[in-house]
Image 1 (tube, rainbow, N blue to C red):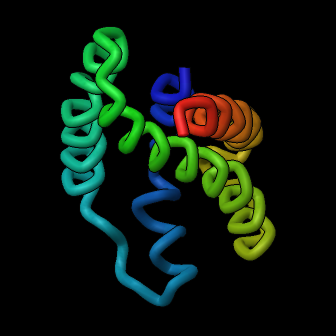
Image 2: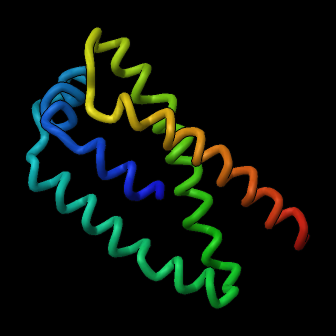
Length: 114
């Protein structure tokens, strides 16, 4: 679910307007496409490892939860700074809430085994 909503936020403003907020030149679209597809490929085995009960697979899931919470906060803040719409503004609150729910679930999972 999180990967599906994260994919909706890709767009030209990420390539052009976001780097400008940081005083950087526009990013190449190929760079972002390559990063996104590489990330999905690297996360693909995690679901299989979790299904088999490998606890080490929780490590990347923690980073995913943290990223989702930060995403849910950062997109609205950046839209305020840019004084306009940025891709991801609509979906980021959903991703943020799902990230918090995942965070809480991970805390329960890791706390119960300690």
